[in-house]
Image 1: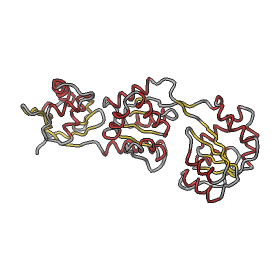
Image 2 (image 1 turned 135 degrees about the horizontal axis):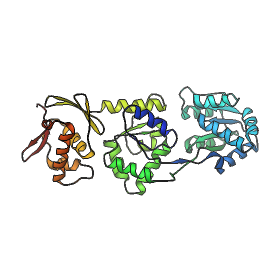
Image 3 (image 1 turned 180 degrees about the horizontal axis):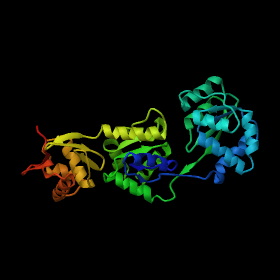
Image 4 (image 1 turned 180 degrees about the vertical axis):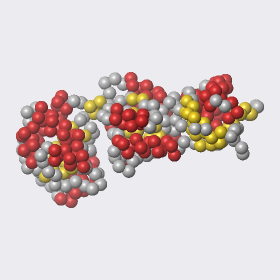
Length: 356
């Protein structure tokens, strides 16, 4: 598994490791510390300069962080007093909980937990001439704030937990190489900025087309929700998403989706199930290096069909020459513990020993 998240990466990784996965981390962004964020300070003081009519809380952690940062600047009590006089709206239960934990109460929270429904409620209520503060979380919400401004509202954007590029791009660079080399089977994403940042790094380094191809055709891409999936969907990359936008649900979705797409077959009387970087032969886990695994996947696409050396060469990570196929076949037979599973068809290629 490849994880690009900065926040809650360890939590997601631990859930996947418990399911038997190997996790590689390559943070695609980092969070600017709230106490050092001059943009958040400027937005907060701007909000305190005159009354605000509506305050929108989009995330629980973001709203709590905003209050804590204000307290660190000596503005906490003044901010709470200002918020208490405004109409508070919460996008979902976590934002609602953060509002109540601060001793405040929300007037509305959409059942769908979506920004779209929250925006529609505001527009239906009428915002012309009103001052509306929108707590952001890591990325702008241009459609949301532009719609409010078009309806006549003055909008204050409160950028909590602003995201910028990683301080050390090395881990992300190595993760991208692993994706292109066939060493990553799934990539779960928890935020749109992480996905967008990863794609931007790939573009700057000349790997964008190859990465999009890998994510489209080989790597399972999972997103915690449709907002997170947006930068990937814009490129036609298919994603799977849990029913509920939660980290635990995302981990379960990844596990189930990988299981569903794992090829199962019978060769030489043995039951074989292909996993990411391994195969299960008659219930025994057999770890397989990348090149032999790529060959096994190519043979398993049409079990029993003879696959030419040229086709298998093209399937190898990074390509290669035909003698590399022979080496990979030998290593594959050794890893599977049963040479009869892969048959040599003289002058034609190789096939799995499946009855046809």
